[in-house]
Length: 406
Image (cartoon, rainbow, N blue to C red):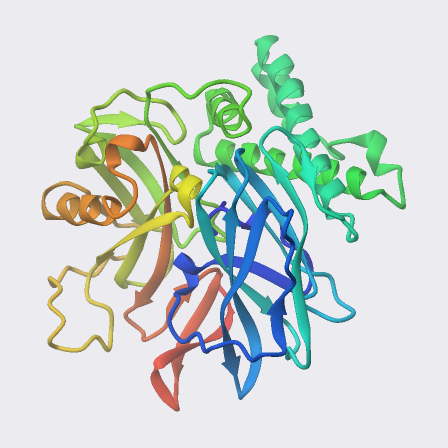
């Protein structure tokens, strides 16, 4: 599941499904008896409730578990019955969830969840493009459209890259609208809506790559990654490091090295089974403030084949308010326009491999995605997911947003 992790591509309106890896499985309470799952004996996907989470005494989140009972990789799921008079949630996996494996999810509602709720699987799409379910919501058709849109984009960009004209290719990526034949349709079907969404979301990723890496070779490498994700070509033995989508530019990845040699984002490189041991990332402070501490997250998308995406975090510096008994090495603050290096060798590599060995040894993985967690500044503020934050006066361990980062 992407980007947050790998479930963000197919989110609709009132519910958002996020991995429990990102939100944490703690603080879930037993679900009340009026919230239940409808039995679907012939379903290739099993849905179960793991608990609920309350805010201000009202249920806002429902913990769910998705299990793939079929013999095929599961790509996307739509649920029904979570809300009343609202659109239910969806989840998708960039790497298909393998048969016999499960993923935990959190369903979040904008309104309190009250009264009876009967949850069920409304539609499930598999890696071969087939869809199971009643699909009363029409989201099965949406899934088909998203898949078709991604295939169309691969065909379009493969043709453009083959022409060898960099200026024309760049102009093609920046054109508006992406799909003029669909832009003229005012009331789109679910399939058409999905087609535009699948095409546009991937096009946005290509444009982001061009910002991180100005040479046009970024398009070819992104194409290779996209082909792998949807099974157009088999995965090679090379390794790849990408960057997760960032809302702003508080931090910039200046350079990535593998055993002393520079590698580009999304480019394939050759390395052994312990490849993360040689990775060093140079990060620049692009803000106007001094950074006290920051968290670097490393996601492994291929791990979604057996559940939630595994996300390893490492911290630079000591965040404010941390208990004295927590031993973290003091690090110099990072001035504006200054850079630091984060290495995944030594003890960091030991911790990383110990974490991955719980489910996916590093030798079985070939892709990593770099992202940033919370960033603390010397003026007492912090940054998280695009928002500037400050401590809650009533609870110094809780942070509250104070506006978008500038």
